Length: 426
Image: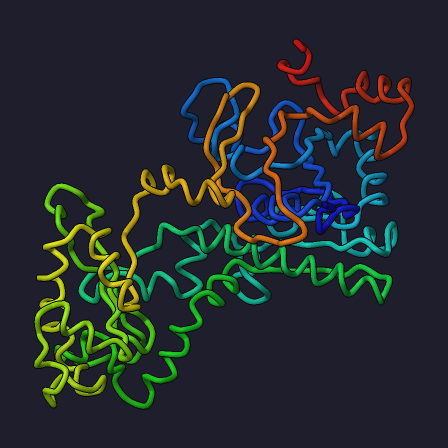
């Protein structure tokens, strides 16, 4: 079956995580992604957080599947020539350089649009226009500036960042949607356009329920927050709420059997109003179904700490999976706290391609995430990340139409760097 983005060619000027997340997703959908890297060095993540010496790090391999690598010295005259020919042949250029870096390379939107009016220029930046637009941003900075950290953690503790990479990978996902939208627009306009995605904006988009609560707070206390039931006054900003649900249905993380020695023996439990009766029966409090202090969602709000303490007394008698089995029979919303080890070993996730095993020529086999978006007529295959400059000759020949003599001349000039050691040996 044909890939959904087959025929789309991406010039990938991204590095580290936010941009590569975007271009990897497009590659999974079938786009031909040409990753442009510095000769002799490449993406910094090739050498970061190494677990095995002298091979590409997992940080790189897990963000650059299904791509081709080409090394270009953009300061070299021949390198510039190759780069501009690629711009004329590609559909999208994606970059996440520091503010102003692309312009300093001579790659302004005006020049790109003049060279290829159909080209889409997609950029990740830390902040949008404003006082911080020239600031450099990393994952945790984006989480703090986007509203996530101030609303994460416990009320009496410091702000906290989340383990989910909502700043980097979250922005990459947003940018990918912007690119696909611009590609669709081009089908009837005939022209490319700029696509900009700021990390602060993306984090805020993922924190919209907290912006909702900020506005609700102007009209009174947030009743579903634990501190309301504890009689603690609210300030003028949305507080940190621990593991409260964040929605209209109260929820908490509760201990399960074995929590004393297993840091992940917990379950998330939501007291959804529609299944309040079965919850009361399961935990041994049938009287709560008719007691005026517990019978309705509104009546229960001041008693949430007491209610969840009682539910936890029941969950501590079950493993998280035993509790899941019992609760699911009654459609009670719940979920186990799964460790990364448990997820890595989950056969169901492997069967769906959410977790994949990839074979790499220097690293060997490793686990990675697969495409989380499943298309019925366009399945995704995950292929290994490229070695540095692995596809230099292939791209020069097949994409740009250089002859073998011209390729040799470009290679001898130093414009694209040396062939990777592994490839030369083969």
